[in-house]
Image 1 (spheres, helix red, strand yellow):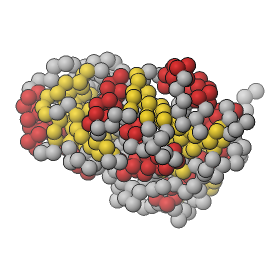
Image 2: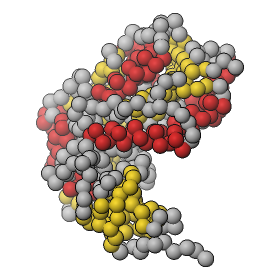
Image 3: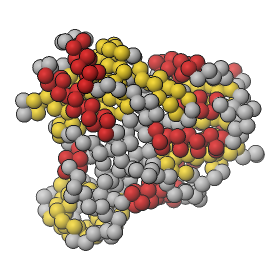
Image 4: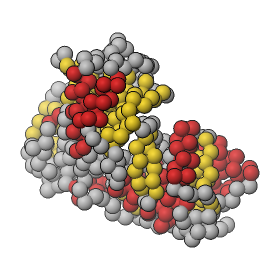
Length: 459
């Protein structure tokens, strides 16, 4: 017989918060049954209502804090819609507590894997807000009016917003300007239920060192009525805009960008700088959204690579070449691989832009290209990996270990797959040499990046 949970949906309970999940939700227990409750911190006693009951765990919503943690921040001055949209899910925690939480995320996963590896305190920011240099904001019809905002958590209901807290304030201002210009031109927002309407999203990029801005309007059709006047109005209202582009995505999908982008006014890309290198960044380029922390992250990766100028380096998942070009200034040769062809073209352009002739870029899946390079006899001294959240393919780890580099520098955005891959590398003859260094790329959110160096063990 199925065992019944000791709580019921819509019922109210009181409990102590004993832990935090990796998403930053408080953990409470009723008769050893765990419930995950937002806006609840360890050490607090909360009154909460159960919102969902599952077989092994449930969810709840805080009704009242009966006691409060010293790590709590008063968010009464914040727009409550920020919490509804889940933009800054850790905004109720002090920043020191956020940094400790991110360090403990990695420590806890290592302990579960029985790995005796130290984790250093998380490297944070002086001002942990207004840091994002890119915004991709949905556009929908709300109360008969074109609105920009963010979707309410776990739904596709738009919450109108003007202050996003974690974005560069220049982006917030630009979103309001572009929104009003679209309204003035009578343009109809997209409706995902009917797949009708024109304006799906507004994407804005803001240079950090170069004060250049791009406005990208994502449409459901190739035709954007009055586009010359719209582009002119945007550039007149926002003098730092050097690029106004239209991206066409007419597929019934949650994917934000379509394959085709056309320039409406100005340049097809903005230019910015990262670790002394210039980068051309187009609408579809992958570029780290927190340039201040990215420089700390990449400086750390270069330091861990221990480059003297004589090494051959492979950069897996190279994107538009940000890590590759940073490494190229300290290495003999750098080989980069990326599956997105347009990103590889950007990487090649950026190498020329920076007068670096010791880089080589290939379009391919990283695991396929690594096997190819291994077969061709390429012998790297250092391999750098910066994979997506799913981590590394097992065949890539096999190829990397067979190439026998002295060290592997792992830049991770997901502690769970990092720990899994550390275990796989151990089986392939590589061990973590130094403590893992977390870096806070995304303050006010649960996400954490880290740098780990693995050294070859001579057998």
